[in-house]
Length: 318
Image 1 (cartoon, rainbow, N blue to C red):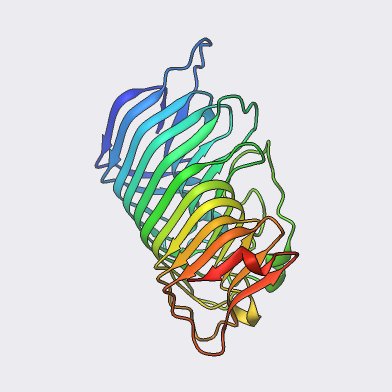
Image 2 (cartoon, one colour; image 1 turned 180 degrees about the vertical axis):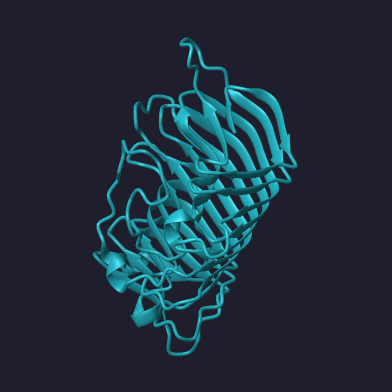
């Protein structure tokens, strides 16, 4: 289904099996002229299987998306299907062609063998004038069999904002390598948006870059196989709350959480795994205003580590 420049649309009780995106919202006018907004769209009670993406907003995103709800649905790859035929991304919220996203709610989604559970992307494939992505709420996602990191990313000068992900449970079978955590991640500013567009990411759970006001609350992210990367990596992020997360310990001594050039971060209500060596690592001279409060950190585990010019005044334990 491609739903383009439509208002007041209701999709429900559908069984979708396809080779392209299952349900894809777009915002373009193939006849030229102004682009009406894609607005007031509700999608619920669907089962989606695809060799591409399950639910997607993009990539033809020249106009506005407003008031979008996706709920109570299943996104899956058939049991025993080879890795190349997995659903690429479960929930994909994107705008890369100068359009805007304002007001998206996703809730109660079950995923099975989907490569990347969540992909949020504000890019600049064509133009950036007036483009924004904000006010996104994703909750109640239960995903097993992931192999690609979930991400929330913008590009320099374009930053998604007010993105909240909460009350989710995710399991990955990627078995990521420690050297992936040290890759230089390309900006891919003008590339086609897809969950694997930046290659192997430095975290096994969430990679957040060039973003403002992000909230990750009450999320369980478990590795079924050893993974040498941190669970969460933030890079150039302003105002983030990480609360009530339950995360598997990285293999080989990597920090559980890495904060690069991150400002106003609040880490609270977490129980660090006993196998961890470092709870949180702060990196870069721009990092500031980081606070740890009411976390359970085992005896002998380092609560904070500072690297790459980060000052010890960048973070504190409350």
